[in-house]
Image (cartoon, rainbow over all chains, first blue to last red; front, side, top):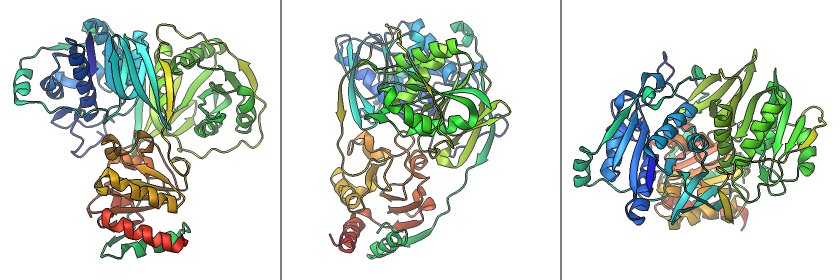
Amino acid sequence: MKIAVCVKQISDPSEPQAIDPTTMRLTRGSKAILDDSDAYGVEIALRLAEAGGGGEVVLISMAPNQEVQGVRTGLAMGAASAVVVSDPLLAGADALTTAKVLASVVQRIGADFVIAATESTDGYTGTVPAQIAALLGWPALTFAKQIELRGSTLSIQRQTEDGYDVVEADLPAVVSVTAGVVEPRYPSFKGIMSAKSKPVEQLSVGDLGLSISIDEQVISVTDAQARAAGQIVEDDGTAEVEIMNYLTQIKVL
Amino acid sequence: MLNNCVIVTEPQGEGLAPVSFELATIARTIASKVTAVVFGVDASSVAASLANYGVTEIVSLGDTDGHLPAVMVADAMRDHIQSAQGTDVVLVAQSYTGRDVLGRLSVLLDAPVLTNAVGVREADGSLEVENLVFGGEKVVTSTISAPIRLIAVRPKSVAAEPAVAASEPQVQQVSPSADVKANRAVIVSSHVEERQGPKLDEAEVVVSGGRGLGSAENYRFIEELAGLLHGATGASRAIVDAGWVPYAYQVGQTGKTVKPNLYLAVGISGATQHMVGMKGAKNIIAINKDKDAPILQIADLGIVGDAQKLLPRLIEAVRQKAGA
């Protein structure tokens, strides 16, 4: 079994974020990190591969400038190798373009199981896993909060508006996982050292034989209507009185 | 005005989820015809309510036969859109099923998607789609140059408003034929995570808890206070990820959007992804130990204090006032 895990390398979300007024794209910080959401997917893939006795986990990522900083984190966690697709043609790529690139890599490496986060932390479109599945002609088992693999049958608990469904399908399939589904491991020192020598294949759009056209444009970025801070009160042991007054004022009580 | 807007309704109980009517409300403002796709519910029983919102045509796909709906719905929509011609835009809810349908449809039609929309406007034949970034600080307006625009709209972005006059939609029954290889995801069982009180996204009062509660056990204070205020209970992503409460409780970017009269945030710092889901509340009260917590910047009443000490006193005060 070969598991492809889609990983995004994003600017550290704890740093101030901005949109470049010229390109209308998110300004990337100097440091790229593995999107937290994807660490869950990497962890699940590693566990399934370990439980299945000999599965292989390959990280696949679309990133500017051959970026590997975030991918190295996933390799340090235990993934065997990575494929990174970089190309100036992909600047400003939308979700469908991203899915075309990733699905093409899945076919190229011959994976029969794809794991992705439900959405990235910086773009949060939330459709890429379903798009990858459609491109491959596989089922999409999305929004999984728990995953089991019994032989070649996948069984997930899929979030619903008021609980969850148990959903099953045989491989090949695409699964998208929500955060919190497992506790991602921290890379060990040994893992960090060995990650440096693990294979990372760098590809361009041409290598994948894709033609790219991006049909979305951002036309403006404006300030949203701000919500001003109201009254701030330090709790000196009687703050409940302030809250009660407010609740009465807005007729909740 | 555009020609035809297809909306994907979603079943809820015996009827349709409220977001279905929000989509119809938006669709009427951008296109002269509105086609509603209905599945998992008897179309004849929801036709009258869709007519009240100006839907001009209903395409009924019937039951999804225990499969995840996206493959069947998307495949049927592709067939309908290609045979009927004249569809300019598709609107789905930013929901689990909505995103799955949109993702597959985008591949079938080779058209890009825009998601998380909070506003959709028609301007001289092109569509302008607004979404919020950085926790609702900035509004990004985008357009799609493809001939068909696929858009996911966040629930509660607009109020559902009936049309001035009800329409008389034709109901077209379709027997969908989904791609067999892709349509292999079967729903084995469904589980409702029971909760007390009103539905989170429909409640007038929402009391939400976060890490500042200190422990999963202390979430009982949130439940108690919500009960006294006849409200729903919510949660930050942090405590959902930590397994304190089920996912269905989550408010925010990856959870539910709420617009109650009162949102009471207890021990929630206000990460950008949480703010997106609750900023539209009419009144916000926040309790947080950290005076610099972002949530205090947007609260109408912010209390700097330890939620674990304040909550029991507040519950007692409300109980006394309510005479309970």
